[in-house]
Image (tube, rainbow, N blue to C red; front, side, top):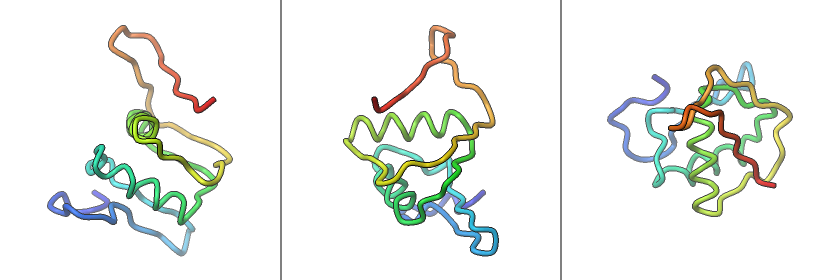
Length: 96
């Protein structure tokens, strides 16, 4: 676990300065916390985003619903699992 479950206030991430990595808690991701996640991404500006497909999808949906955006463009997105919507079809979220 990146951040203790009992933690109810941001930051919901930890930084590994030696390897230039930011670890974000998938457990704490919620509509109320979405702004804190986007702020952390904009502050640290990771070039490559890796993680659970569903976590990235969920954050993207919160961002669209709340009008949040990244102030930079990551180079790559590497996902560790596939997301299926309720109909069983792959779903793509784009800002274009």
